[in-house]
Amino acid sequence: MTDQVVDVIHVKSRVESGGWRPAPWVVPLFAVAGIVLVPWILFLVSSLPTTHASAHWDIAWAGFDLALALILLGVALAAWRRSPWLEGAASAAATLLFVDA
Image (cartoon, rainbow, N blue to C red; front, side):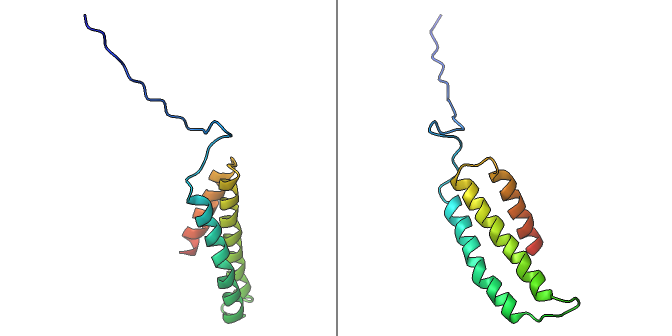
């Protein structure tokens, strides 16, 4: 009989220094996306008509984009802090982006 060597690959899903770590591009991407939305929100507030089919249409759009900016910044913060809230915040951001599209 021959001796067989079995190689085992160990996959570590957590970093030993404190938990799961997102990809390095996640934090800057979501932070920049949230910050870039701020001038867009200001543009919407100043350029959209106040009334359309409903009163305060400008506030509705700006409010939606404000929520989107906050949730994108929340994703960046959760990824930076390695928070367990990251999946929920990312899901909420994806939902708002889908609705916005």
